Image 1 (cartoon, one colour):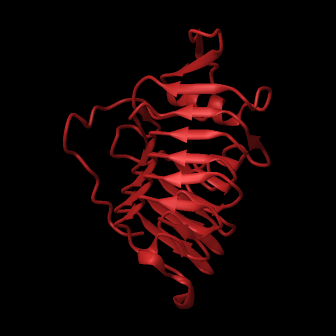
Image 2 (tube, one colour; image 1 turned 60 degrees about the vertical axis):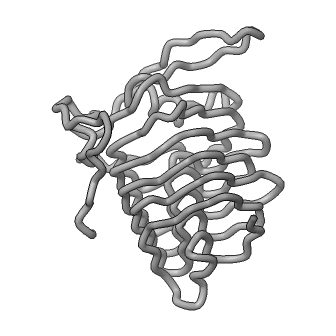
Length: 231
């Protein structure tokens, strides 16, 4: 792996904590003005539960603070984990401008993000996503809406297709104001800083990561490996 140049600016501190041990906990719930339930995510245990829980795929969750999976915000968790597997997420995950640090995973967070689902204002940083199969940080397949979402100072590495946020984004959904900041994305087949393959519209996207893969299919400033509608 390349040497990580992690971001230590702003109000982030290298405070020592106990790294996540692989457990999960149900978050507290509040209700919005219309009575809809919202899960309030405050710990890595609650984040892991929200992403993996299959009993209510249309649920809504929001981060209340930064989430740290490692022993501090600069460390990757020592435990290699898998997230949701064969599961279609149909809900909403609101990052509220917060960052999830230190994930070490052989899968994306979600296998599939379904139509009308929303991932909004979320950053994944200082993390590793690696597999011999297709890999990305957020989803294998996106049919929904990923907005203002960033992968930062991380590594995404695949023996096949690799994308910074998604492997493929299809259907009528959108990817808007998404970015790859200083994240290495390597796909033995196809790679893209935001997504490897897309038929969706990608708008106002930005990539400063190092993208490498099959030399014939790295294009569009490395935002996307294959066919893309771009604004």
